[in-house]
Image (cartoon, rainbow, N blue to C red; front, side, top):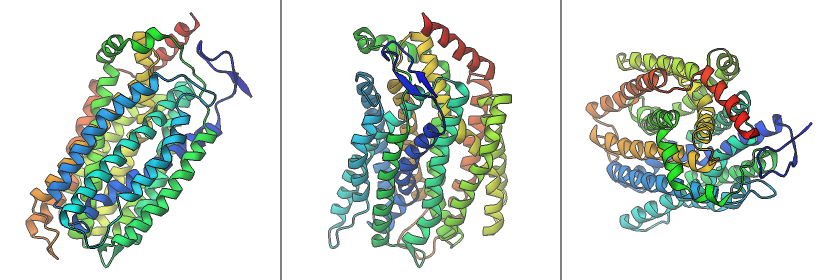
Length: 464
């Protein structure tokens, strides 16, 4: 049941074979991450506008500034991690253990409202706590994401890790998006005390998940420890610029993240104001998670037969068609709107389920080009693109909500504002999904055949 860790720095240490324990461990990592990430994605904007009474445009500025800073923090932290030696518990796991506690505490502080303070104080509180939380998120997420490429080198096992990671995210999404609206909304309005209670509960659950990830996962691939590799930034940058799979998956993932966050932001207003039913967000959250779980058993056979990029591209095309249809049906009532959108959710689930396997492939491609094993650096570049997507979406979401005429002081929004919210929730995703489809089909070069050949070529190079 054991195997030797690979890499010249491993000292032929016997380790447990890859199996269900690793899958569950990796699942728990994103389970913990997304307890707060999805909580923030789903409710922080409306919390700031309706509880702190910060304008949507100002919140957009905050999200933009914070995510741009996080993008820098990601790369800096990734380079720092790659200069650390692998220890008894691996190179990445110890950082998840160390940084998860301050991360969760900062997350809870975001939803603390001190009564009787001025509007300026609430704005300053929002800026400071949100930026600190985002920075600490990098210190956990960068080592967590990088760890997948050292748990296993097998392409199929990496697809399994990507799937299980997404399952963890979907479990968190299911809990937050189904229970969250029922907890935090009272009479169709967000309640500050209930929001804080939800943040505390999800924070405790996040810590439990991080500890499970730390205990259950095993790092198997250990890179050679040489000073030349650690400091050769020029070689690293040259390899990154030549890494076409990385460049195009960065662009696709950035667009996907923009879309995910835009939908998450706009959906609160869509169901709260357009459909006058904030509680329906629970149903949408449940259906989105259900769509992913329906896609899970299909991913492995589809990827094995057609490949990752081919499977993900088909899902993007389906999602684009569905959201285009929703845009041209503005008079749909709540139930048929949700039913049709469920098909689109099923489509984009496939990209979600394999995206992390794309990342491990481009990390391997970087090693193939440069002979440098820089998991955290390459992953941090990818994470930076996602943060830029979050920055764009955070700013875009706030600006767009303000631009269509949303006014938090109005009991009922104008017809023009409602139409704008509907357009943001349907046409914008349709356009983004079709662009991602074209990127995957025509620009991303790692087809099934080339990915399998890459794994074989790397295995040979590591024997030398």
